[in-house]
Each structure stands twice: as C-alpha cells, then as structure tokens.
Picture 1 (cartoon, rainbow, N blue to C red):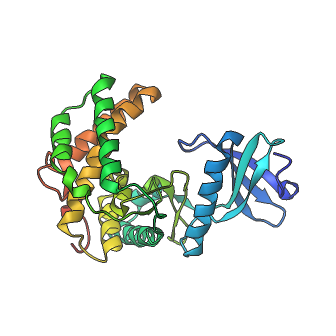
Picture 2: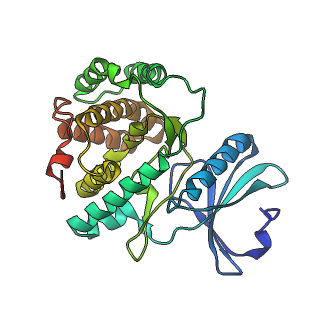
Amino acid sequence: MQDIKAYSTFTKIEPVLKGWSSDKKYYIETTDRQKLLLRVSDISEYDKKRAEFEMMKQVAALGVPMSQPMDFGTCSQGKSVYSLLTWCDGEDAEVILPRLTEKEQYVLGIKAGEILRLIHSISAPQGQEEWSSRFNRKTTNKIEKYRACGIKFEGDDKIIDYIENNRHLLSGRVQCYHHGDYHVGNMIVSPDNTLSIIDFNRPDFGDPWEDFNRIVWSATVSPYFAKGQLNGYFGGRPQLEFFKLLGFYIASNTVSSIYWAIPFGESEITTMKNQARDVLMWFNNLSNPIPTWYLEGWGRG
C-alpha cells in the first residue's frame, strides 16, 4: 500500500468490512482533511477495475451525487490494483429510512429515481448482443441452475411460469449503462438529508428497466421509498409495460438468488426464501404486475 501515489498524505487508515465485494476497502483521512475510500483488488482484476473506474468518471461527469473517482493505479509492487474515491458522509439509507416520516422516505425515493434516470443516460457501446437473445439465455441458465441446486421455495412454479409466459417482453429493448446493484444498501443519506450513491463495482449494459431488479431490498425497508423511486424515474406513474417487465426481472433474480445464497450458509438461504415469499405476496402470485407496495405506498400514483 505504501507505493500508492497519495500514501504519504494518509493520516488514518481503517478497514471497511461492510459489503459483499471481494475488494479490500479502507476509510482514509489525509493531511488536508479529505475523507476517502480506498479499494484494493488483485492485479488479475486490473482490466475490469480500470473499466469500472473509467465508467465512474463518466457517471460523475453527469453530476450524479456519488463517491467521486480520484485516482487509479497499481500498488503492492504490482501485485494489486487500487481505486481511490471520495468518501460519502452520512448513514446507510437502509438504516435511516425507517426513522423518517413516510413523506421523507417517499421524497428520498423520488431523488433515487431521478439519479438512476441520469445514470441511464449513458448509452451502451455499439455492438452489444440483442437484449432479448442475451437475457433469455441468461434466464434459461438461471432456471436450470435453480432446478439443479436441490433447494426449493414455495410458489416457485408461479415464478417460473411467469418467466416462461413473458419472455416476449424482452424484444426490442434499448440498452444503457447499469449501476448493477441499485438499492438502499448502496445509498448514503447525509446529515442534511441528501442522497448519494456508492458501490459502482457491478456495472453492466442492458435494458434500463432491468436495473430495478434490486428494488426488492428497498421495498422491504421502505415501500414509500420504492414507490418514490419509480415515480421519480418516470416523472409520475410508470406505464403498465414497465410493471410487467419489472415482474419479469424480479422473478428472474428471485430464482437465481436461491442457489447464489448456498455458499453463504443457511441464514442467507432463509433470507432469500423470505424474499421470494414477499415477491409472491407483492405481485399476488405473479397474477398482478403492479406490486402492492406501489398501490398502497405514499404519494401520487
């Protein structure tokens, strides 16, 4: 770490243990009182991390409130790659939202939707595989892995039937840059109640509406926030076509979450089974494309 360019200015280095990333993360304070986030990965990740950093610069240039990319390079005598970002002061949105009023939760959701819309203004590069072909293949693979994993959840037939009956919805979808993990666990609320987005380490290109697939985490914490996110993104109530695709993407994610959880143990498997139960309840066993948290939540719509 000592061969990081700005290392001589570091006055505090504390490990950050939160999150699922394999990156080593550190909270940094510097001689000029800056607060930074240092992410360190194995050098084998160089190309991937370089691409992530360059995309973050594009997102930051749009004015997105986020951890600003500061520096990128190699360290540990060439064995590691690092990214240095600004630190976002505040509390995790998933922690602070339950303490706010319904209206405050909804208003922050509106802001989250507006920010996501801005992120999605970055178009996918030319030459992307057609979305329907790519995501149908990915979804088929998820279903096969789920059926082979040996763990089942009640109502899985409803989820899989919905997927199979709605694959046609993927046709003709435009593609853009994805945050890749957009939910309240990757958002920070500052002391003055402004929202910032963190953890741009799962980027992708695809249908912009697929980037809503993690909204289940947000809806569990705050249905008012989740409803606000949709209304903020669309400038009002989304069209029915969106809700049908939202159900498809959430269904696809629900299937894959079960086998994804297996290496993390019984507790994580239970969490994902509970989430599957919630999804089935919200969408009335996938018979209603508009989730109950949208119909019942605070605000217009």
